[in-house]
Image (cartoon, rainbow, N blue to C red):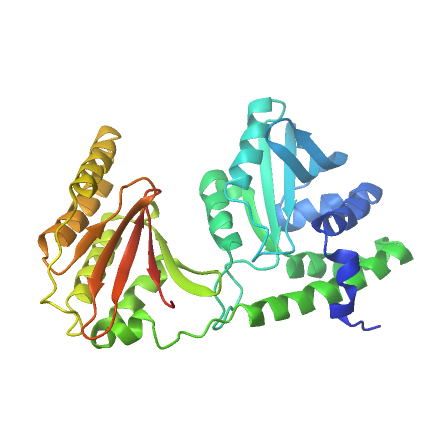
Length: 345
């Protein structure tokens, strides 16, 4: 039977409803829970217990927690479920939960499933990517081969293989949930298609805007308040990739559209903040980042028509003026070592 997914929001809007659906299935059918681990991790598990909303004081509550034995090891599988990738992603939630379980020292091996609407395999088309992809990448970096970033579509495909094991009531709820999550994914992507308007970097600096294409594989497109941005985490790049970012910023600053008659002077507090930031990198022996940011600060400070701006509390901005138009921010250098390019103002 088919259902109108858009009419099912009152049932599944709360993420608790979706995670509880999985809990109900895994708790009642331990064989299905074991099959889930076999499907996505490739080994046989003897399920011991399934918990919902397992709490770690001052850390948070894990949506779904499965304790099991595998190869004579005590293991834990954490499942964090999201159904609002564009609205409810919490930064560093994966590491917080993973470290909480690790610090508990009860388990030999810890596995983590980040269950969201979308992942890196999703075709986003013209839609910006949600923060869930960034958080998923952090999880992969931290946990490695014991981490999986799955979508609800992956889970529904798995449940189809074990359909006859479910009760009629569970089958009904799974059917309803599948209709809802598919429709929600379609509408969420449509809502987050942001057309690059007439005031984009491409339009301001059209003669050199092709260089932005070299940056896109290095970062993620995100949306904030209906603005499209390209965010690059430079800590994840190697020296050669950082050179690509530096060269792109330099090329954009050399556009024929830039007003070279405009002269800026960097404020003393900005210079001091930049020096402090570089000293911090040196103190942490982050030589690659030190080289990169030294080059950027030097470029912005020594090029008279560029302005290095900011107090360093949150970061810095490199600004310039477009001839007969506005002063714009070429890029933002956040203190957390991420660089953002605004693709729509």
